Image (tube, rainbow, N blue to C red; front, side):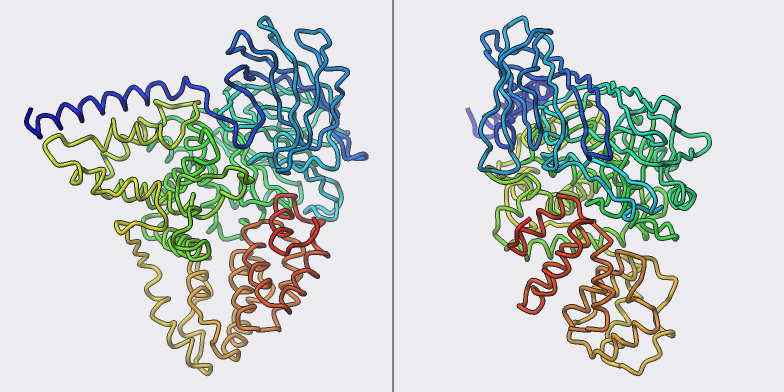
Length: 635
């Protein structure tokens, strides 16, 4: 057989195999072993019936979790749940309504793993009932003091389950490849509204102080979510969207996020019908450790994106995008985290472009490119942590949640779009989401689908010249850094900023009002601040500060980059305001660059430790863990 004919047959067969692999991806049981004790190859959960009472006085949730389970191996002797920081009544655990002798394994040396709960089962087992309550060690829970809320009058409770913290408030099989539906029956103090990651959340309190909810779509455990507070709901007319916030803040949030209905329409037009019914957003207290969390139907959001100018609503677009990439099609393991975030960054960019135009969206893209380059520099050019496909064995999966997954993942997908053209690429993405809806995929599952549907083998070309090789796909996914075919992002709106940088950096007497604009968007200010050389004359920083009131700004994005510049330039006048900023904002994106910079010098570390001791009670455990590890101080 001639070489080219042999290659044609070989690649044809290979394509068939890849199609077969893709078709079966939704049916297989993903490996959960790296970050979970669960044994899904023997038995796994399918539905949760959760009964819970929230007690602000004791800062405890008293609950019963009743799990429907599916037996895979008829010889299975047990089903294993993940727990961490839970007080479980081992004497009360039941299988099919009958008491059994369950046991807790030893505490893992890997803190995030917690303890395995072993429940004996038999081949007729259908339900497992677990009675328990949360403790001070339940790290997903943030019991917010009244003084730390917007109203300053009432406490607040919220959860953060991603990546491996759901097990600290619900005993579960805490792996992203295991999906289940759930219903919840909640009891809360009078006047408080309880909300969850469901589509039928209440819009106001009731006299019984009880709420019954259902999530009818199968989700992974990290998308379990709960928020309890004195909350107000405001709907957007003629849509399935609305916002929840503390009453004193609700109208401000409502005005800031008024593009939500348009975002849903734009995303649905691009990638298929929104599958979840409602899309609401709740703005949490400032201690929330992330910008947003894509909990189905109810996105959790930080107040730091509420600027009064609506120029950071890309965060809402990002969390909405997760309704397709992440919630609908989920990374099967945390090694595949880029499948969630790289895709979401891409969809977010497309939503923003649809609503605000290419020039606006490209500003964010350019900043993201800078972020990923900094991340690669920090990790090291050859570090395996700069791969898209990670190996997080024996590591907290939270360590994989870096700019690599987000921004390198985005650039990889943008490269494919630019190569194949938007029409073909959009059709592929829409098919990808539809074909794999409500399932969990590995990186290899995605690559198989990509090969079968888009980057098809080219039988009359030598292997080293195929599109797969030409596009450097293996380099993108399994290699470090950024490949040579990384897209070039040109943000035209940054041109005027770049053109004045040399003047600002070298001339302390220049009239800033003639070259800088107070009506710049946040993105434009970030570009400007990031371009200033820390060795710039401090008189220039002082003049910038006096002219634009940067020290003490209530825009957290600008504040972070300004204080970072001030630390590097040792502009001490900004330090008191920086300390106040770090004492009230818990978003890890803002905390870590500043703590990291302070930690570079002995004097800076002393300042960092002082700030952390005074502020750590404000931070969620996600942020506290990261800062404690950085500063090498006790949590």
